[in-house]
Length: 143
Length: 121
Image 1: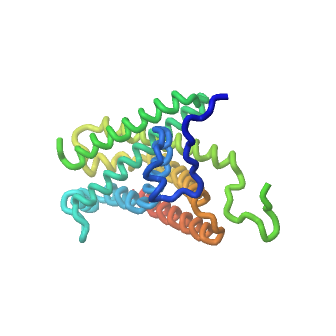
Image 2: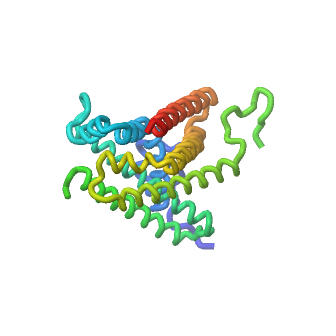
Image 3: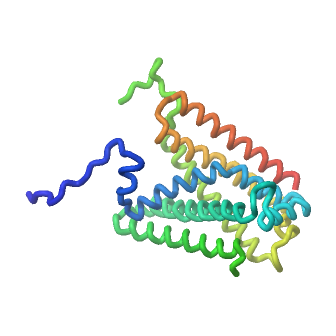
C-alpha cells in the first residue's frame, strides 16, 4: 500500500472565520451552497416579489409607482439600491432555476458521474452569472 | 435508530421522505414550465411592454388559473426547502418549531396577498 504523501485536513465543528475561508469548494459545491443561499434569499424577499407583482399589474397608477420606484426610489430607499436588490433577485432566480434543472436532469438520467457533475456545475455558474450581468446591464440602462 | 416516541418524539422532522422529495421536484417543474410560458408571452407581445400588455397577460382566465396553481406550487416548494434549511442548521426543537411556524405564516401571508392581486385583475 502506498503511503499518503500528505495528511489531509479534517473538518469537524468548523469555524466560520478560520476554516470556511480556506475551504476550497469544487464547482458542484458552489452550485449546491448557492442553490440554498438563492432559495433562502428569495424566501426572505418574497413580500417584495409579491409587491412587484401587485404594483405592476393592479392599475395604471400602480404601474407608474412600480416603474417610478426603479427610476426615483421609494420613500428613503433610492432607486439604485432598489435596482441592486432586484438584481440580486434576478441572480437568485436564474441560479436557482438552472441549478434546479441540473438537479432534475441528474435525477431523470441518473447522470451522477464525477465528470458530469463538474462540467454541468461550471455550465450552471457561467450561465447564471452571464445572464445576470446581461440583465443587470439592461436594468441599469447600459444598453 | 434514534428514539422517536414518548417525550423523545421528534416534533419538527420531515417524517415522509419520498413524498416531499417528489413534490419538490414536481412543483419545480411546474414553475420552470410557467417561466417559459410567461417568457414566451412577453417576447411575442407586440411593441414595448407597458401596463396594458403586461396586465393583459395575467387577465386571461386560463393564465389566472395557471398562475394560481403556480402560486400554490411555489408555496409548497418553498416550505419543503426552508424546512430543510432549518432542520440542517437549527438543532434545538423549540427554536426550530418557532422558525417553522414563522415560515408558514410568512408563506401563507404572501400567498393570500398574491391570490388577492391575481383575482381582482
